[in-house]
Structures are given as C-alpha cells and as structure tokens.
Length: 216
Image (cartoon, rainbow, N blue to C red; front, side, top):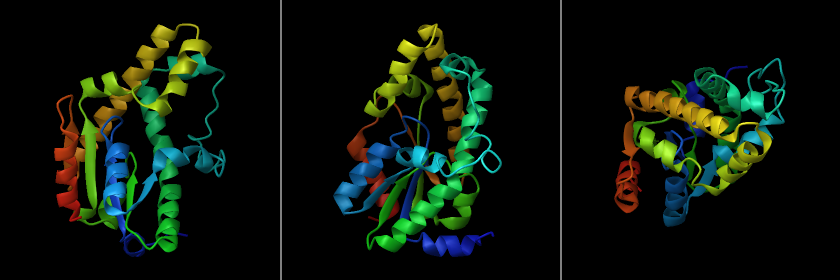
C-alpha cells in the first residue's frame, strides 16, 4: 500500500521539519524552539533502535547488515560506509513519517522534528515555510562530532574495542565528513531555506532566523 503524498501532507500539517547534517545544530535548535513555543520535539536519532527492532533482512537489508566485529565496522572504506549509512536512513524514513503522523494524532500542539534527510519526499509533503536545512562546515563537523553526550559511547567503543583506535577514529570522522558533504549538497539543491553553522555562528541570531522562517 502506498499513501499518496497529498494525504501525508495533510496528516503532517502541524510538523515543522529541521533537516541537515551532523553538527548542523538540528537537535539544539528543535529543542530550543519546542521550549520557547510550547511545541513537541521529535528527534529521529532517539528512535533508530526502536525502529531497528521493527525491521527484517528482506525489507530493510541495510539496517540489518551484519558486522563481524567493531574493527570491521570502523575499518570500512569511508565512501562505502557513508553510502551504507545513508541507505539505512532511507530505509528508516517511512517509520519516522509514521511516528510523526501518530504524534500529530495524539498531540494538540505544533511539532518540531529534527531528522537527517528526507530526499525528494520532503518537497511533496511539506510547504516551504515548514522546512529548513541546518548543516555544518567540514571543520565544524570534525571538531564538534564528539562534543555531544550521546556520541560518547561511540568514542568509548573506538577507544576500547578496536585494535587501532587512532585509525578507527580518523576513519569514522572521514565517513561523517563525507555524509555531511552529501547532506550539504542535498540542502543546497533543495527548494528550501538552508543555513550553515560555523565556529562563529551566533545561536540566538540563528534561532531568530528560524523562528521568522517558520512564522512562529
């Protein structure tokens, strides 16, 4: 069964989408908007593993790809690893959309959702003033990737579960950088407003810009 995009758009009419790359400031911005405007915050990163439990190898082969150990995971060619991770996100997207529809039916409030990418689908299910892309410069991605508490377990795995932590760490950062490049290009190709985060970005000015764009 395929749900027509116009139906999805109606179901998601109370959702404001913040898309973009790692370290782009999506979650921080969504959290700040939710607090300032009494919105419900949905962060896709919080739902990956519950979504993963709904999958199977036939329908979501990338989300179910097995790895022998952490060394295999962190030693893959960064370009191949980036491609695989983006395919995982593509497979997860329908589950994110279903979550948002369910949330819209439960909550009598506006919803601000931060997710990585939605491909061409977002142009069919959301208006211009309901979407913004927040991405980061390459230097910012590399410098800030592990400056989040939710990334510390990953750093702990690299330091304690790989044979060559330094090499594994550099491989991961190269992978993350490649994903950020792809997501940045998606943002710039889209019809939607976008904004780059750098080391000099003022959060409050950026927040005011997003609020104005969303008409909040």
